[in-house]
Image 1 (cartoon, one colour):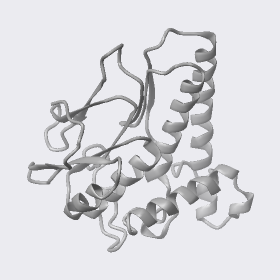
Image 2: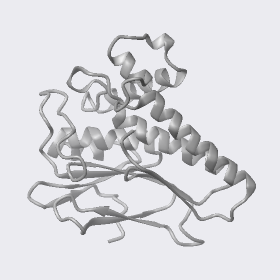
Image 3: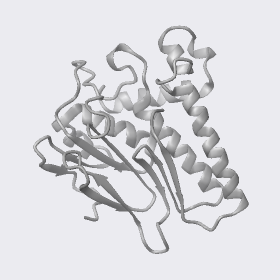
Image 4: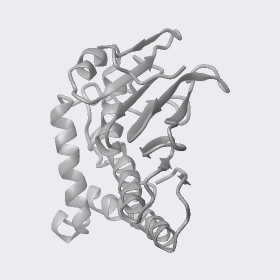
Length: 239
């Protein structure tokens, strides 16, 4: 999906955990084959071009598009899997795949893990006994500096912005690149919707703060283009 995944497992290695890790890696390669918009032969690319039908796609395509519809409804249309008229669920599917990989590890007995999908993270358990995870969030305007440090247990963290890929998120209502924020970091319980809500919040811009405050279980910190910052009341910052 045009990005890098990594696994940080803090539990004592077991044969079951090693098998689950191998299964998680295989699963991510399968997700790439099905959903990558960088691959013209992927199911999602072929579906977007009208070369196949939803019924002929792998069943997970229907599941992901249903989740995209939920995110679109909750975000009042600021999240969409059809940006610019094309089919692209990348704003949700990366988080969905990362969360699924973390669940495989958890089911195998790895209860203290960080799975990182291109900078969006699903955290389970703790970094060490009694110590929460501490996640540095890169500053979008100052390379090498941090905008904040997120601390927590059993937490998802997703950031959308222009630092890594430039202005790639579109305002779904105007079709133009969103430019109201430099970045927004959203935290929540699970990464699938946290990732989608970060995309929606960045597209929405300054007005996203009130919407994010209304979502139970989700918090956010945003950096404006002038470098100033706002955060929701419960954002789990340890900086």
